[in-house]
Image (cartoon, rainbow, N blue to C red; front, top):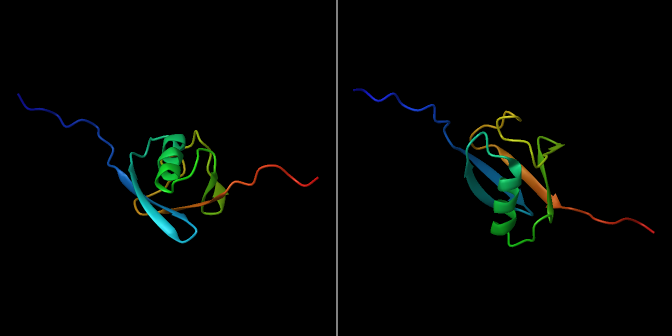
Length: 88
């Protein structure tokens, strides 16, 4: 009996950058960004919901995946402090 290899999607390395600091996060292409956001916020020592995440000038949604956005191994995700509230 020969075993067929499973259809395993290779992991990709994302470079997440905040204020000149960089962390590497290894994920599968079908991982929802909600999970990636949580990992990045934890590594930067920030609370959940602190950042907005941007790829190629467009904001990333929590339900998006790297595969949805054609993100490849080594691509950079920028994160910025989320501004809450407004002017009174």
